[in-house]
Image (cartoon, rainbow, N blue to C red; front, side, top):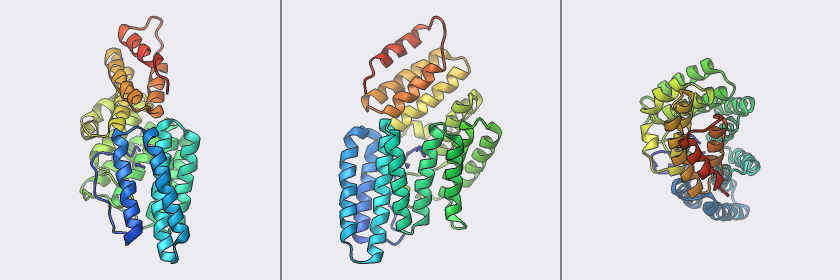
Length: 315
C-alpha cells in the first residue's frame, strides 16, 4: 500500500485522472477514506467493514453490463483488496496479506490498469522485503517496474526505488541499497504534491529519508539512521500513529547499533505502547525483533521496563 510503508504522511484528494467516474469513483473514494482511518484505528476494527465494502464492489461488478464499467469496478476492487492485505499485515496475518495482495494484483490486471498493477506488485514486494525475503521482494519490485515500461510517473519510480532499497538492505547489500536510495531522493525532487491514484498519500523526500532509516536499521548502520532521522521528521510528526511507531522502532534499532541502550529502549517502549493500543501485530513483532538483538547477562532497568511491557502483550 500504502501504501507501506510506503509510509503515509499527508493525505491528498483521490484522483480521477484515470478517467473512471460515477459509481466506481464513489467506491474508490470510500476505500480512500478507510485508508486514511488506518492511521488512528485498529486494523481489527477496520478489516470487517473493508471486507464488506469489497464484497459490495464485487457484487456490483458481477451485475455490471458493460465491459468498461466492469474494468473500472475491477480497479476499485483491486484497491480495496490491497487495503485488506495491508490491514492483514498490520494484524500479523502474513498468509492473508499475501493472498489479498495476490487478489489485488489479479483485479488490477483485469482492469487493464498497468499503474495499479505495478502498485499492487510493489506493495507485495514491500511486504516481502520487510519480512526478510530479500530475493522475492527485489524480483517483485523489478517486475512492477517492468510492468510500467516507459510510462512510469515520477512518484511510482521513486517509490519502487525505495522498495528495491528495502529488499537490498534485507539482503545485506549496503552499497547497492545506498545507491538506489540516492536515486530515489533525486527522483522526488520537484515532484508535484499530489500523487496519482492509486496513491492516497504523498511520497516525498521525507518518505525517502524514512526508508533510509529502515534500511539502516536492517543493515546495522547507525550512521544511516542518525543521518536521515531529521529529514524523516515529517513522518514522525504525521497523524498516522502506527507508521510513526514503526519508524520509532527503526530509530531505536539505530540507537542500539550505536550503543545507546537507554535511548533505544525508551523509544521502543513508547512504540510498543502504540502497538498494544492498536493491537498491531506488526509493531509488536518488530519490537520483539529489537529485543532479540540485545541479550546482556544482566539487562539494565530500561530494558527490564521494556520486558515488563512485552510480557503483558496478548494480541
